[in-house]
Image (cartoon, rainbow, N blue to C red; front, side):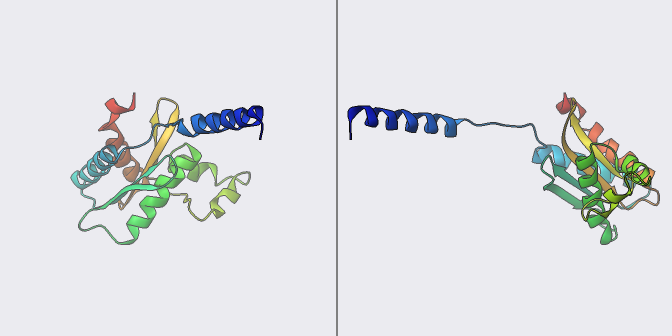
Length: 161
């Protein structure tokens, strides 16, 4: 091997090493933030007389936290997860998704397995960036679930600037 070839190999290895050393970070919902959102949403609904489940998902749609009030129905946990995922995916409340997907133009979106056209899901925004979603299920009205989700987000509002 020539000196020139060895030098080229060393340069290539150095560039690859420098590229792999770069760390790109995107804003995301922390565990502490997710727990505050979920607990506040549960307390807000409980104050209104409702036992709910709450799920907070990350920007990738992974569950960051899931909480179920003591008397919440078992199926509410899955509904809350799907509402949070829907809000994250479509960057709108799941109530807005419900209304939009009722039209023939968008009705096919309802066929996706992990989304649900029920109110109670709200995207979590850091400025214009959606960094997660929260879903609440268990109130008798979907609008009430959404109010509780919004109360949860309000509790971390200072961290979302």
